[in-house]
Amino acid sequence: MFAKLFHKATQSPQHDVPQGSVTVTDLDPRVAVHYGIPSTASILAFDPIQRLLAIGTLDGRIKVIGGDNIEGLLISPRPLPFKNLEFLQNQGFLASVSNENEVQIWDLEHRRIASSLQWESNITAFSIISGTHYMYIGDEYGFLSCIEI
Image (cartoon, rainbow, N blue to C red; front, top):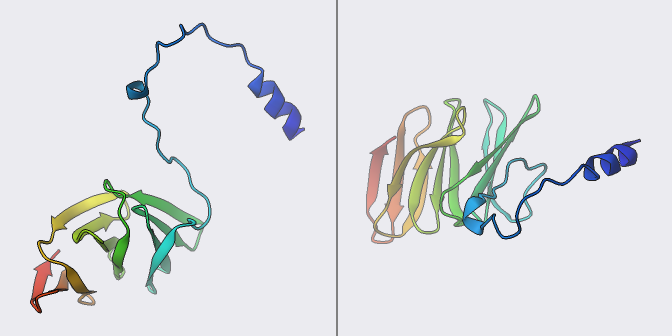
């Protein structure tokens, strides 16, 4: 039955579109839906209170999976791997650090970047201070900074 419906849908009449009238700039291909764990998964973070698992990939995507069939895909504007990923526990935000030292705070409810900060030196240590809106960032020169999110 599915095959019949599929064949029926693919045999719909073609619209008369002049050849060459659609250019590459007219198209905006992007991932709309993704199911399962990405094949380029490289880092994980877990929020035990909300029971959410975040999976960072090598191409700048973050897959968030949780109970009650919660599943979301966050796509960074720059397709770079993540070297740190951590939830602000039970607050609906996720912090990520890319390999190019860009710190991004993701709003999970709206599935977008809430704030972003480009760090000037190489970030070597990163941690959210539990129960607060602060994070520690350590860099290659031994500096430790406390940042308010």
